[in-house]
Image (cartoon, rainbow, N blue to C red; front, side, top):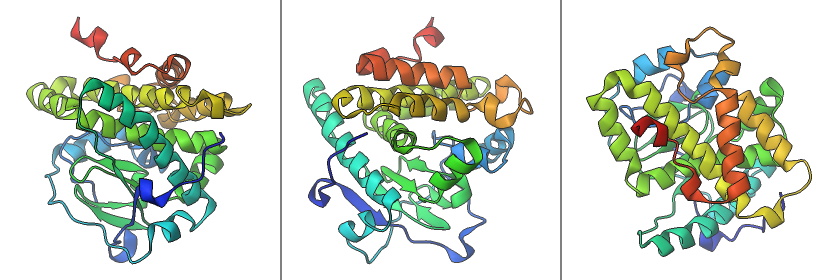
Length: 282
């Protein structure tokens, strides 16, 4: 995908403050939707993660510390440069949509870290994978995850990586529209439906990722669509767990569902087509 080079004046990029050892942290987001792709890739059972999430407490927002400039962070490696390019494009794509809808738009921050990081949602290790924290409206990324994505899941290519960033950005869209708070409240009121609601949130974020790509169709190159579908299929709950987890405990949706919603967003380029909750409300 041919994205324009990043302009550091148009994006918020930070270096993450790590914690000793880079491990042993947990995401203290108390039921807020975050991406667990990395956790699943590293063999953590989604049901186990759900049990952990139920006991989490909301952490105090903390400012990620880093002495490097945005330009230095964005040019640290090829993956970082891609991520910064994607962030700029995502901001430029979504901001006009919010303006047209009369909703205040706030850009998310992209925080690069290695090993572990403290966020507004608590501490996390790299094993958690890329995640979005609503408390500080930031996307957290250890770029070494992309090597795991390609080696372990066979989901290589730049568009597969853009899909990861765009999915996280989708959670930011859900946060600033207020949907994330509504779903969190519904999960607390109906614990038995918590997983189903979480899956619908994740599928909508997939669709939003597709909307971004669909609105930048002129930049898509041959093979990008296939890379996206491969990535979406590879990270379905059924594919990642190999049948070890029942569908009632899925957290992100099946391979077929994730591919379906990414495809819908990409083909339509219309965020109004991403209402994954329509059937649930019936």
